Length: 168
Image (cartoon, rainbow, N blue to C red; front, side, top):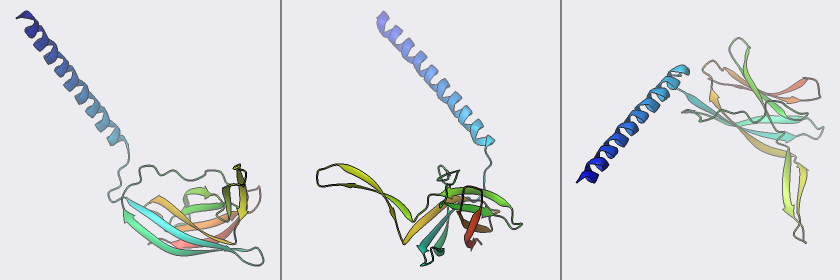
């Protein structure tokens, strides 16, 4: 008879510890949520562009479509924070022409292609394209009025403006 009483006491004790630990974890999670800034109506911006190289090696970027959807990205991590020559720089601009945020996109006209030759060996080759498409997906800052796409032209921070898209 003694063993069921001890078992019942241990089970109750374990249950109490489990409930208390869950309550503590929930309190910590609620504290973390209050530290972040909450946007009332978060929106995600999708921009699809086509890019092509003209006969004189000039780059032309055209907007295909723009979609603004309700939602919150889990992670809004830009592709690259440092650009190389040929990469595209995407800048979010407010109504006062102030840069809110910028990030780099790998040159969409250069693609790394992996292939297998006749002997079964894998190889990688850099292919330069005449035209391509690329997508920008980002959490939309409510202050953003324009998205500017420019290209890094040399090792100094010289940029060539390729496209400006107005965000309503």
